[in-house]
Structure formats: structure tokens, C-alpha cells
Image 1 (cartoon, rainbow, N blue to C red):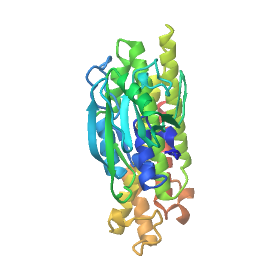
Image 2: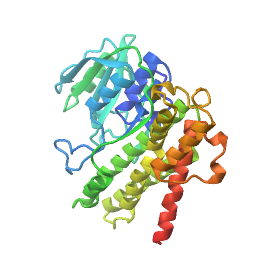
Image 3: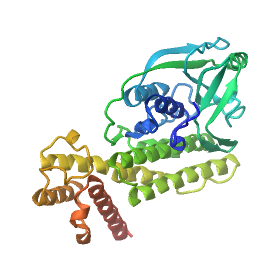
Image 4: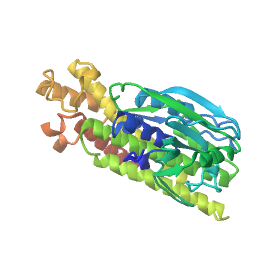
Length: 373
């Protein structure tokens, strides 16, 4: 359990230890599959929420579904342990408990939040592994491995007022890596943001929104990395800039929360920045799927047959089809590519075509902004 996911800084506290198990059973890098589908699907506030605001935070059920579908980790047994009841450990066990009572995380004694860890037999005792990676106002959390005696672990579990939930997994064969996709839900960014912007308890709303932006930014970084590795190419500059905008949003949200928490005025511009970042997700992440579908349609081959980013390997691809793809993309996205960009080197790869579309969408947006001003 000493080999931690390389990209733990792109995972949330429940994903991190699912990733640790996935890499152990199926090889390093398996955890990147958690970034295959990028979602924007706010769900209603969970029962007992202090704000009643919608949230993008996935439930444990959603994480376990992802583990089964993407990571080859099927749930063999899932148990809810009553406060004070023992947790028997005779094989690797994924445990979810309140971080407030876990002494190795910065939230210990400071913040109530669901947190995961792995525990497994280790000689006469037990080993706890936690791949969580984050910087918090109470200090950093970094991947670690801890030795516990069985007596110490029993005392830790017995001290959890709300009990814990444990899951045993049965590894199974991995499916083919899925194609990256952007999957927005029915709730629009405007509806979602309005709830936070207009909530009467500004401190509570901004504290909650700080977590929301943190989750959204991490999921976008993971998705971008998965898509780049799947394409066999580095991140495009436009995607890098978009991820930088998400990082700035996280910082803005945290600054706003801290100012209001100290009784200061709420800084302006946060909700406009958030709306821009969510709107720009489409250009940054939905474009590639649309380009892939367009190429598939023009070439008359199934998307599943586009196993590589390179189009010249397909006998159906030729200069006529190349021009048709360009024209179809311009019509589909209502853009016009720059003449200087229309060279064969830019038109023979799905990712380079995607970059052309993103650039054209950005230029169109800038033109519209200039006209409005």
C-alpha cells in the first residue's frame, strides 16, 4: 500500500483511496479512468444540509458505481457499523468515516466531513493507507501509511460517534478505457450559481461554495489529464489556460469566504467568474467529443473504430474527406477557422482539430465582447 496514485492532487477524499486500490489491482495509472466522464450535475441538498443548497459533491454510492464501472472494483460486501461496534479486518477494507475523529488528517478536531482510508492486515497488526492530498487552512494532508495495532484500531473505530461504513471489493477484469466525454446534467450553471449568490447566510453559502469550486476544479484537472493521455498528446494550451481559470476561481471563492468569515465585505466578481468558468467548460472539454463524432460521420466509420487520434491511418481519410470535416466543423460550431491554421498538419489529428475549434470559439467570443464594449 506504499505506492500512492501519482495524481492524488486531482482526486477528492473518497476517490483517493479507491484509486489506491485500483492501481494496486490493475496497475499504475488505472485511477485516471475516474476522469473519463466530466460531469456538471448538481444534486439537491442532502438531508441535514445546513444551507439547503444544491451540490456537485458525489455521494458514496456514485463513487462506488464509478469504481465498479471504471476501475474494475466490484463491491463484494458493504456494511454500516453502529457507533462502538467493531470492524473486523482480515483483507483490504475501504472505510468511510468522519474526518473529525481521524487523527492523521488536518480536519481532526476541526471539521466534520466524510473521509476514506484503507486498512489491511500487516503482520500482527494493521496498516492504514490514505492517499488524500490537499492543502487546508489547518495544514497539509499528504499520502501516508500508518501502522496500528489491532487494539489501537479497535479504539479508533469505537470512538466514532456516527460509526463507519466499510466496503470490501472483488477485483474484476477492466473494460476497454472509455472515451473522454463531457456530461452536463439538467441543472444549468445559472440556476446552480443563483442559489449560492442569493443565499441569505453569506458565510455558510461561501464556505459551501469553496468546497464546490475545489471539487469542480479537481475533476476538470483529472478529466483533462485523462483525455490528454488517451490522445497520446500533451495538454493543449487552451486547456491549460482554462484549468488556470478554474484555479483562480478556487482562490477567489476561498478569499471571499475568509473575508466574510472575518466580518469583512464580500469581494465582488465571484459569481461572474464562476459563470464564465462553467460556460467555458463546453469549449474546453465538450469539443473533442463533437469533433470525434463529426469525423466518424464524415468517414462513415464507427466512433469505436477511432482507436487512435491519428486520422491518416484510416483508408477512408483523404484530402476530400479532410476538407469535408473542416467545413462540417465550421457549420456545426458556427465558426470560421483562420486561413493560416488550415494546413494538413492541423487537420490530421482529432486533438489538433479540437484545438482549432476551441481557438475559433475563443476568437468568436472575443469578437462579440469587443462589439458589446
